[in-house]
Image 1: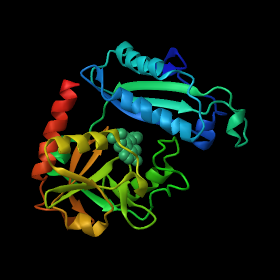
Image 2: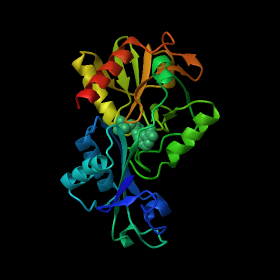
Image 3: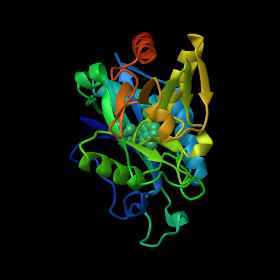
Image 4: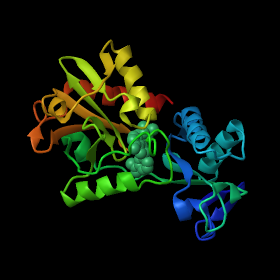
Length: 284
Ligand code: PXG
């Protein structure tokens, strides 16, 4: 496997960063998880735009133009001869001192890993997931804004641990007001009386690229979509529930905190959106 590190391709064994890199020392950096389908990188421009926005928020200068970074991502998929791939694009603050000051780090490190995608088992899509709400709240937007896709994922990892400890694969995270925010690596949607609802960004959620795509697919179907605040009670009593993310795409949820959602089977609208999304990624 050839890994892009600052403009050069290294073998997996030689692709390294310094132990003084603030990405490692402090989780100081940003990243994107991107997919390629049939050799084409899906929504590359959107991912690059989000990466630059995350970097702007943490005052990290990405040492490449958007165009050059897009070309580097495409090239990394190509040199690895991958058709369907999961791409991890990382920009760390770079090598610095043991002190916090990020401005001592002179050279941000740009890393692109393109690897085979590991998918959830098919049965999860056919039968739906069982998820739980966890005690760990989503980061307060005024502390570490969830809109920044930073290398510090401890908030999500704590929630993931709680989900796994309870035998679930995903966790619903609430914000500090008790409203539904998102999952550890996915956005959440519910459907009630024909209306699709997802938490607005100000609830403290990542603006998922898949989330945005589902919102426009639903709108194309003439389904009303509301970015609105809701609680666990609304999920328990929803007709359908599903999660969206680059890795999971759209995955139905059939049980939340022991409550069966709708009929207990992936819902009709969820299945319709899954089919439309698959069609979209095939078309590129
Ligand atoms: N919320 C959070 C907190 C995320 O990390 C999403 C939503 C969905 O966003 P996209 O743009 O992918 O639709 C994510 C996705 C994984 C994995 O292995 C997922 C993410 C990051 C790292 C790993 O599932 N981010």
